[in-house]
Length: 171
Image 1 (cartoon, rainbow, N blue to C red):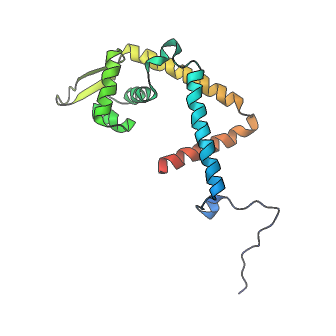
Image 2 (tube, helix red, strand yellow):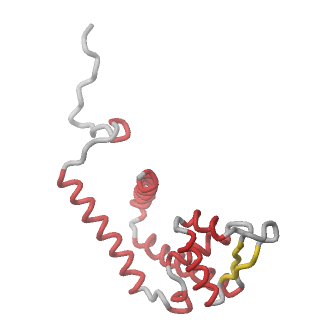
Image 3 (cartoon, one colour):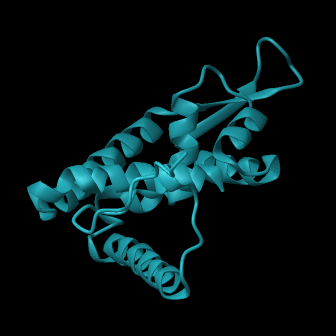
């Protein structure tokens, strides 16, 4: 029986990596990815310092502290250990962050009503205010970046961001 595999047509693009499976990148391609990745991270970090990060109360939170507080907002009377797990830090690290946030008046700890051996954490009114302010700031920055992307490229950028998220989650 003759081979029925179609010959590639020079006018058609090669099959995507989804169809071929994982391929080994060439050294130049990998080097370019690493360079661009580093530039992206550096741009994000510099944008934080350039963009007035720290004005209007947002200096009160580090990125990790705000992630911790957002995690607490989404949970019902979480323990320190549960928050640490969700944020991806050790319990002692979470405890230190929570203590810092307590001193700033943004979080409070108390004994659990269900289990006195456990400590639960909550966000104070001041913490809610600072988080809301930080969210507004981040939404403004995201909007500025979105507006800077050509409309015709936005769907591609969204696809690439989703792919990056999945790749990062898998590694």
